[in-house]
Length: 211
Image (cartoon, rainbow, N blue to C red):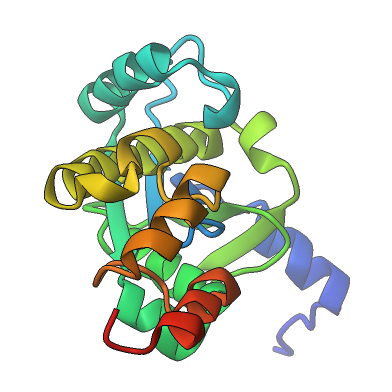
């Protein structure tokens, strides 16, 4: 008996209609001049929905913190991962972001059948994946991932502020604000600054590599 041959369109439809767990993935910290880039992956429980999920950027810090705890408690599983400053400088920020996303998905306790990633690029994964522009405003699991990544990175910046108070990390979270740039010019770069980023590289060129 001859086996049925499916067209590419039929194969795609069958693949995307396959049932299974769906993970949302997002990142935080591509733009700052210091600190790691952080990614999170979340598989929500459809039977235990979380109210108020949204893009982390439109939520207040207090609301993000509360949702962070709720997501950790009520999601089927979640994972937060980083790519280090050294990896950012060696690979570039885009590839380091993809690496952090890949690590986040690999860190999930349950393996998803499909991964939805915020943005227009995908990390290398061994399951079906789709990039969704502005996905953090459209897909609850991506919104949840954006909250986990943002809160995790903000907490890292608070720790950096304790270790290097002269830079003001607690306020600007590593972004290139006027305050941060002034601190860079005054104190040089600390070990957590991304030396491949032009504002940091410019300061190092002016002040010398030892600052």
